[in-house]
Length: 198
Image (tube, rainbow, N blue to C red):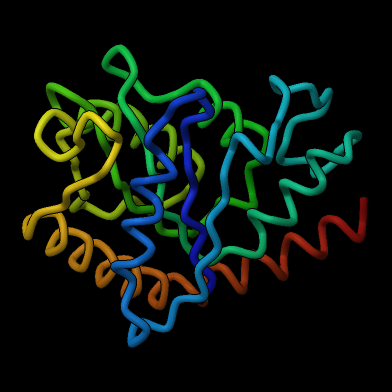
């Protein structure tokens, strides 16, 4: 199973990469995930600039075709996401809006971080967006309170609660990924037929 760990913040000075590095170290080999870290700062998508609806798969820009291929290759996602002003980041919403069928029937987990709510308000806000893309959110999330877990030098100090939450999330993600695999395969075959006929 191909798992993409998506760093959702593009802000200079972000701690998203630090959090993503810690999380990927928690992924046990026994779960059988082939892990790839996808950094939206490196993907560098401009604000949505495709003239056609994403469900049509008529992409006029090379950056969209690359993004489509990346998302298509994944079976599951974990969003490493901060909370900005009680919401999720604009680059994450933009990346989601570029595509449609590529997201369908894929489970998604959350590693959130922030101050007051440790990012959980952003997670709750983005779930309706993901459900409208026919993704399946994992119920449990890893939430990291930066005031107590990140020191002044930018070093993350995880505790047992974070470690256990990461394993719970990954276990649920693998179970959902397995359960949804037949739907993804059928959907991909139908999508290929539509694309061939267009």
